[in-house]
Amino acid sequence: MGASESGFLNLISFGGFIYVIIFFLIILKSSYLAIYRSNNKISKLLGIFVSFAWFFIFIEIPIGFKMVWYIFFISIGICLNPNFRGLNDAKIKLYLNR
Image (tube, rainbow, N blue to C red):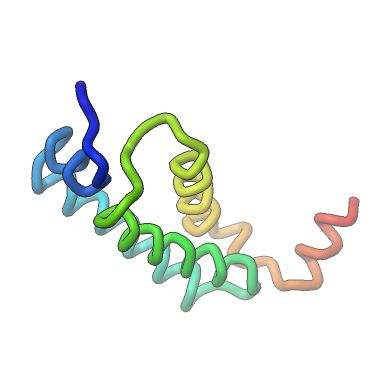
């Protein structure tokens, strides 16, 4: 299957408007949980990254096996993880210094 230069057009051609709506709802929920329901700054920053990446999908990020998409979906997974969102900044610093 071919790919276009816009990720949004790829989403429509791969799954239709239902796929785009489901994809948007996943991004909306992960961004909301990370920005408003987290206890640390890293989750908030990842939530902002996920929400901005959604807008960049309309402009320039094509779907494919690229590092941007790996980072994007790992960020969504971290934003949806309640254990990571529950950590405060001091616990994250201790966890990363191991």
